[in-house]
Image 1 (cartoon, helix red, strand yellow):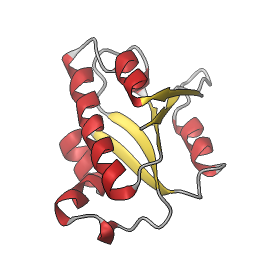
Image 2: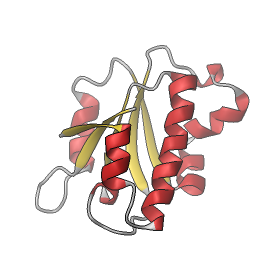
Image 3: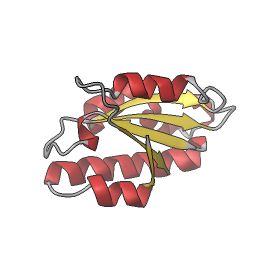
Image 4: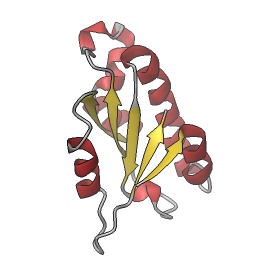
Length: 129
């Protein structure tokens, strides 16, 4: 699986169409909030967004936050960013959050499973926020 910085990710996947730019900006907003509020460590983006599809429906990703993260510790107005329903229905970001320490085998395997196309190729990118 390829590993990119967020800037490299934005340069490679976040342009070409208005929809791609819009989803990339929404993810950038989410990353900014998650860095400060939950100690974001890493994200994996998979699905149609990391293909050449010009108009992906949404942006599928999994995020790893610092050990000890608790939603109660996130300021009230920012908690919605950690609600998968809000992210999916309002931001078109399909989100799953994992806490640091559970990433060595499980999350990369899950990303590989969910990010595999019909031909058996893993279509996913690891992104350093």
